[in-house]
Amino acid sequence: MTTILEMNSDVTNLQCASSTIIRMSQKKKGAYVCISNVHMCMEVYDSPGFKSVVNSADLVVPDGRPIYWAQKLLGHSEAQQVRGQDIMNSICAQSGGMNLNIGFYGGSSKAILDLVKSILITQYPDIKISYAFSPPFRALSELEDADVVEQINKAKVDVLFVGIGCPKQEIWMADHKNKLSCVMLGVGAAFDFVAGNKKHAPRWVQSIGMEWFFRLCSEPGRLWKRYLSTNPRFVWCFLQQWLFKRKF
Image (cartoon, rainbow, N blue to C red; front, side, top):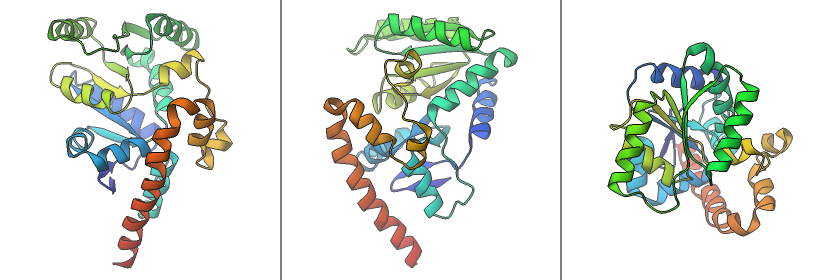
């Protein structure tokens, strides 16, 4: 594990991260995994409360290319980028053979989740999706939330993919860790990517750390403020951390 600014991030790879999540799911005990990128790192840096949420996770994987580069610069030569979408695909591919129940919480609508389920069943015929729910954008009442918890546990979900955006999904997972008997993964916009509503950057664009620019061009109205406020600050703050560690 390495600390980037204020965020703890595990040094891992796709195979190790997937195996760890599957092992955790077999314990039938609440756990959660954060998929870290620059946005999450700066949310942690700015908020002591959110810092506690992320640093209390059972696993924090380096999804963003800059997070992976930061791990390398801090001395972890074995570090690899572990994209959240790749973890989701890996677990779905293995779920049938491991007899795991998969669940989805999030997405912009029930129609999107229905499409996601259809696509994944086509890709992985032996997958078992035992739960799917797209919550309203408003906060759930205590009664509604209790019903969600009951339904997830009743469906015997082993791995629950949570896609309601950062930092909301990480806070939700932390709040539900002791209520659910599954491993939760905060996968952000993964459902929209699977459904085809959003496009992944080409692999070569990802490899040079410009996926953020590809997404900015795809959704400028939604993302320009986030990237303007987080990316330059991350570079400046991390350079100070790196230079200090190199010097001493």
